[in-house]
Length: 153
Image (tube, rainbow, N blue to C red; front, side):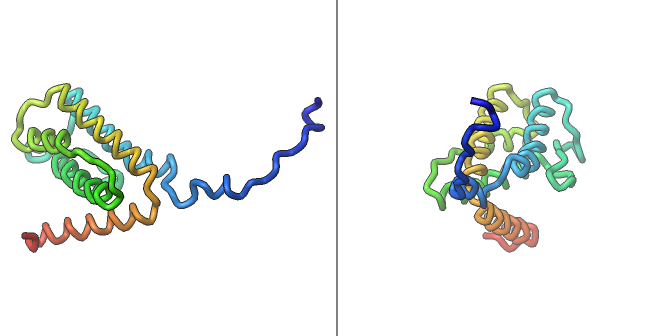
């Protein structure tokens, strides 16, 4: 049958609405690309330092400590997983953050385990509604401000 004679597919609005309200691939790339870049730099020992502390350029273009960002990442995704009843093991990222804070040697096994956690957070990010992610990010920013002012217990 000629291409122009084939019947058209019926429009299905449910198919179009299926992913609405969830983060897209561009959002995921914007958030996760700096993290993967930082891990690549750690693996190649080509990371930037500020006052002897490894730093990376985050998704907003600001320089951040890698170990502090990992702990914040853990806190945020632990909160998301706790509220959505998903399992989450932040230990590999915490161990890597501790090693960076102490100035110890980073092993390839540590990086691979931490990258598996980042990959898992990526699947969580893609399956969580965008408004919920914005809410968790606001909560995390409030927690950071409270910690900066020294008002946390």
